[in-house]
Amino acid sequence: MMGSSHALSGAAVWLTGSLVLDQVAHFHQTPLQLAVGTAICAGGALLPDLDLSGRVTQNKGGATVARTFGVLSLFVAECVEKLSLGVYKLTRMKHDPPRRNGHRTLTHTIIFNVGVGYGTLALCNAYGKWAVMGVLFLTFALALRGLFEKWAERAGWVIVTLAAAGAAFLVYERLPGDRGYPLLGVAVGVGGLVHLLGDMITRHGSPIFWPIPTGRRMWRCIGLPDSIALTAGDKTETVFLRIVFTTVAILSGTVLLVPMLLQRLNIAL
Picture 1 (spheres, rainbow, N blue to C red):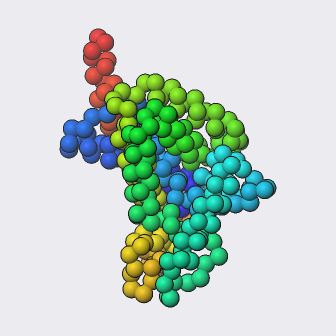
Picture 2 (cartoon, rainbow, N blue to C red; picture 1 turned 90 degrees about the vertical axis):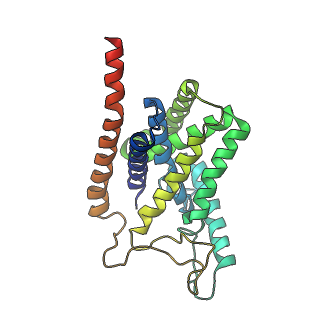
Picture 3 (cartoon, rainbow, N blue to C red; picture 1 turned 60 degrees about the horizontal axis):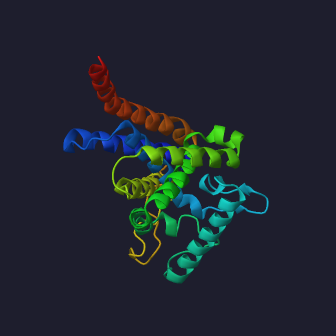
């Protein structure tokens, strides 16, 4: 899947999940909390593709997440890709094919994305304000890149960075609750898992079960059969699925927010 599709799917899943929790478990969130959770989940849904590096010295190529902060994020993506490839080579079994890059290996596993979510939670609990602002800044920048791809490309990474930094500061000053905000870690982790599901409907799939061997392979990619799997970047993804994700997100957000707005109007009247 392409970056925008991943980001939209993260937003749709977070808003739909929030609607279910609101109706079934009576877990209510303020409009600000909903917006922040949606943005973080959309940004988190791009993180697994940090293993798709580009050309650092030319500031070109790479996945959406790798281009978020220009050369700096491309360099980080290059390091993550090499690390992922190294882990693949160290742990591959006899029937795992040789690889020349680390894309769709380590960062495309369940254990990695659950670990990132838990690590985010632990980081915010341990270091408080600055860790929370750092998580908000990073995920907001990714969300801007994914959800507003064309604008972000025209604006450039400097504008995206400044916009994300400003939004992170303003949001943090207005968030209620404790110093750790557990939903930050949950949103990042859910976004990563949604990414895996998105890649599993494409032809390549994802090695979600690593480090548990399946059959004679450690890195078996799990996904739909080729006969019904999508091709990343085709019209089914870039048109049909994006329309579906956008529609689901808008409908879920509307159902959640309209009662809040009506209640506020009644109070005001």
